[in-house]
Image (cartoon, rainbow, N blue to C red; front, top):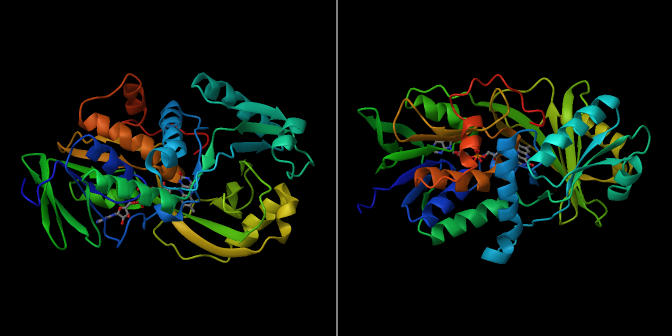
Length: 385
Ligand SMILES: Cc1cc2nc3c(=O)[nH]c(=O)nc-3n(C[C@H](O)[C@H](O)[C@H](O)COP(=O)(O)OP(=O)(O)OC[C@H]3O[C@@H](n4cnc5c(N)ncnc54)[C@H](O)[C@@H]3O)c2cc1C
């Protein structure tokens, strides 16, 4: 094979592109991943806080993340790398009747899809997370099989393994155009080289729309700015990720957990959303999130924050990813719009893409692909997006 000819070119070496490269290379395809940044995971991936859950409100994401959890949790055993996987579970807390009702209703759906999740009353929940503020606490969901891992370590682990199976990664190269002949993909041009392939996967995260425009497609992915922070490291006291979905002035949900290395890592969803590519930290974030966190867990009040950062969710209008072939351009594949869940979706989506490209899809795949189709009407709303 000519050095610049590949079966598949993946645009983006992030949470999606890296595992996808691994699973395609494992199936024997020649794969090239191209990224504009100097190394793997330098887009949104390294800005994720590392939460991994299958507790979604939608069957497609539930199924994909159940598979991702199997991959993350067995990674060390199978491949040997420590990716900081910690099975601490997730807890969505209810301090008001609204959240109690909606979360309880959701548990029924989640159970139908095989999730290990239960509704815990106040007493039971305090056994799982004893430091939660007891005042007005009604209860919450608890899904013990969810957890966390390090996005940088995990993305590097996918990258290293993908290379072992023969995938090539070219960094510091910007995709400038995608070559199409008679409606079919035939390669890409970067600022350095021309590469040929009949399949190009758009895994460009928040830049997915720009990549789509190179072949004349308007993909509904918009960068949505979110801030996060990490504290100093302290002795272990908290197992689950705590999620509070109550809306407040200036924010909707927020979530935090204690990483396996002792730091508390946290993030908040601004309300209204902050659209755009800016990743400059703001002075609004810490006062907003700290107040809410201390309210839910007073014990956190003495922790010192070490660093804040800001990154981009690749948002879709309905909160679900977009996964599938383009109808307009043959050979152009979309794996984009993973919103605030691209890290946890990555391995599950990567495996599914490898099955689609090698025509080896499984029974449940069709249902997932229907829900995540690029041609759905996007009017739905994923409750836990
Ligand atoms: C603060 C914060 C907290 C988060 N927490 C979590 C969490 O706990 N759990 C979770 O699952 N998710 C979380 N996320 C979301 C997660 O980070 C994203 O969903 C995920 O990283 C998207 O992965 P991706 O591979 O699609 O995009 P990216 O990681 O951004 O990768 C896309 C890559 O495409 C490359 N690219 C784009 N255009 C070009 C071009 N023209 N030429 C070459 N390369 C190009 C970019 O350089 C980039 O590296 C969080 C996000 C933020 C901001």
